[in-house]
Length: 365
Ligand code: ADP
Ligand code: MG
Image (cartoon, rainbow, N blue to C red):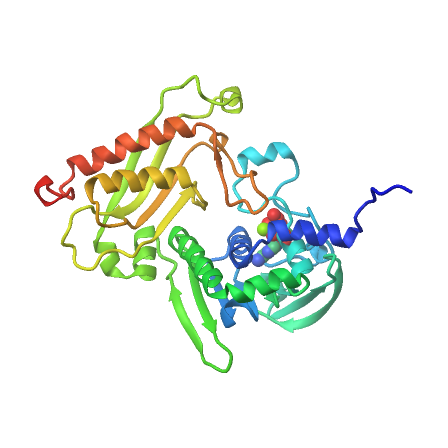
């Protein structure tokens, strides 16, 4: 008898979903990105019991059309990408149509949505574990969409246990991730609250649909933090190098990278120091850039040994110069010309601190 058999469809769906939604951060990230993609100018994130009971994201975006109810949570159904070629010109956060389908497999999940033309009458959508629409009912709603994720990982007992055990850390990571979206999203009000069992709801932070990231940072981290920062405005010009990957050279991407943002002044004596927060973005997409972070921290350390800087750095570059499609959770980004970028960044950042009035005098080091 053959020993190799196909895994049952439902199990495959759960396994794959667990790769897209790996933790609490993924839930928050996917839902906030969907709200931003829907053109929301106001996004409210509500945790219950730090996310263990539920995570709810409400936006005032364009809502969901009734024609899309049936397919919205099916795997690989997306309104954002229809062919592989579109990937390079992507201007939305989402593109794989996997988040909602995964959440159906991993939680008790429902959506309430209304479009501008629906008045105050919205629809509540309930789904099967597979992502198939189970039914709709009328629900009072403002224009926009509210997505509710209850009992995350309930169907995966081991992962649920891990989540319960590590909830403090997971919740902390989710808040850090929300800081990044709140600070980078200009013109969008992002507010976050948590409600512990039998307690009142606690407002955690809120931005005010500000026109600049500076004001967002002030809303989230306070004006003291803002005062301890210096503006980053670096232009990295990279000569074409032989180490460039074949993908990059095939499409001849622009070799310019602009680094916009804010970083702690290395100078001592600024009163309370900026909190130890570091946020990186590529074309305003929050992402994990460990090598870039390393350069920032190393250069900073050469000017100030005793502190870890606050960093908010947005790397603006041609969309051909990187690939977001590296990991299922889309948090890692592959920079095609990373070595040259790191080298330039190091020189440019050193130049900024070297010439600026913020540098620590040698005698104090
Ligand atoms: P993706 O974002 O990759 O398209 P998702 O599973 O996250 O995949 O979402 C599937 C589709 O559901 C989106 O393409 C979008 O059309 C719709 N959608 C999801 N969230 C929202 C929202 N908050 N407002 C409006 N439409 C939404
Ligand atoms: Mg999405």
